[in-house]
Image 1 (cartoon, rainbow, N blue to C red):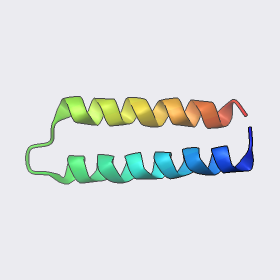
Image 2 (cartoon, rainbow, N blue to C red):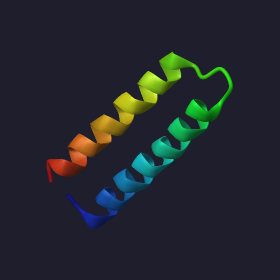
Image 3 (spheres, rainbow, N blue to C red):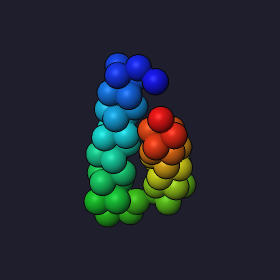
Image 4 (cartoon, rainbow, N blue to C red):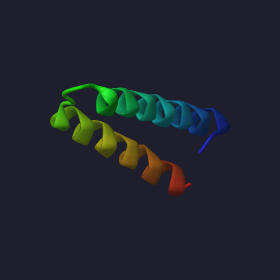
Length: 51
């Protein structure tokens, strides 16, 4: 995997983490959105770990 691809995945992972913190900090967080963000974060983390 190229360095630029890894960096791109890391940026996406960080962005998802920021979105997740924002959603969880809301007075009435959307559990479906939280689950989707966590799933996407996990997928990226697994892709990073595979290489």
